[in-house]
Length: 323
Image (cartoon, rainbow, N blue to C red; front, side, top):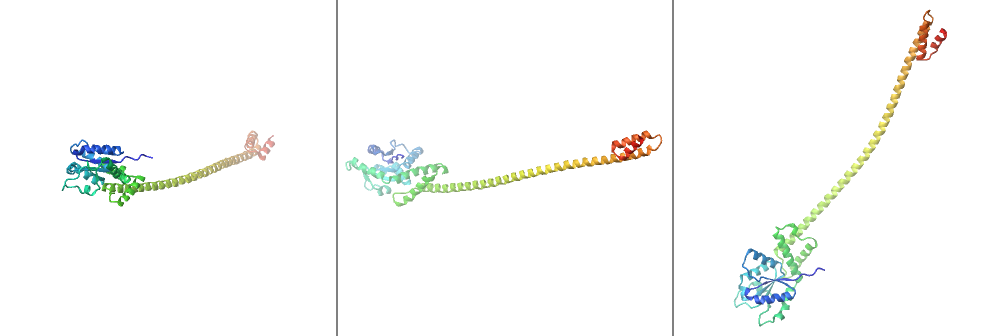
């Protein structure tokens, strides 16, 4: 389990009461608290004001050391106003009571005072009451401080979304803000409220973007699936078409071979018919010449030519007659 952080207090005081504040600071430190004290009393400047403002924002409470001097101090009153602006817990620690008719800030006047006056209250006896007051409603106050720092950082960085609350941190902050309405001492600053609301709006927008992204991813996935199915079916169709074309090509090749064979057969028949016709003519001429005196050789040659072209009875008869 993470160690619970120390409670941090800002001590606002008059430099004329420094001895008492040193004693108070040492006692607070011994009690396990963290106190921020401006010991130097440097003049107002931009850097000084930034340091004071940041220290008050990071503190859980402001201890205002009440004395006639602090009530007259512009520095002390300015620190008080900053704490009020940040809705910090204000704890007036009375070191010396105000002078008669001295003006007391209404926030100081309306808060419960812790008296630690010299020669009137015993410091060590009152100290536990002061510590108890500091730790009263500590969890809420601690969260107030944390959110004040986060909101200030967000505002300082031009309210960039990267500084916003997220997840359980945002849920806890919203719960804390709801609980802030249950007590008069629980006051949320305007900046804190804006910060928490802006964080919720940002979370809603992030969720919408995420939902749109998921939806788009699903649509793309479906389209890719459909495309892959179409491509798969197309590849199957192409394969079937290629197979069909191959079968057609094979059939065409067989037909071509058959046609070529038929053509060769027809050509051979035509040649045979031509040879037969020539053989018949030669046989007829040989028979005619065989009957003429002096044409025996020619008749023999024609009969042999006829037999060479096409075997026939007519040519054989001529040769038999000549022989």
